[in-house]
Image (tube, rainbow, N blue to C red; front, top):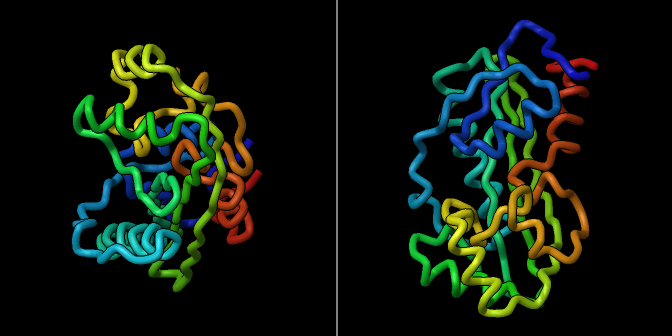
Length: 197
């Protein structure tokens, strides 16, 4: 069991229900204050650097308002080859993404940043997980899209939901695919004494 310690509250700078659920599963006590940082202002570069820059920007956006708190910012992308798959807005986009992932290995990158301005501490990292999809037939793709789970998910699937049956194997952190690499995040918080067992 992990609990809060130290004088400063912990804040998740994300509106993602998946990240919130992961931190709750880890037993952490925290507030949710989503960042309002405009992601479109960050030029797209190397994917590993891009997610890290966005995570830092989101964390700092909230840290400026709550300098005494420890802030967690994060950003996750799905990559198939050199193509970034964002969140599909339509069934057509979701179908295109699922077809691209079918029978192939893709990468999930999550950049995260944990900082506290008062403590003058900041730590950031990009974590990669490789995910292999089974070969999907048209009826499987149609069924999955009909569940509406594809929407608001990078890569058009949710590994923690019905999308789990589309995944043949995962190499690396499972929670990273969900949206936050808990091993690395909690490890840093324990090292800094922000939380304790």
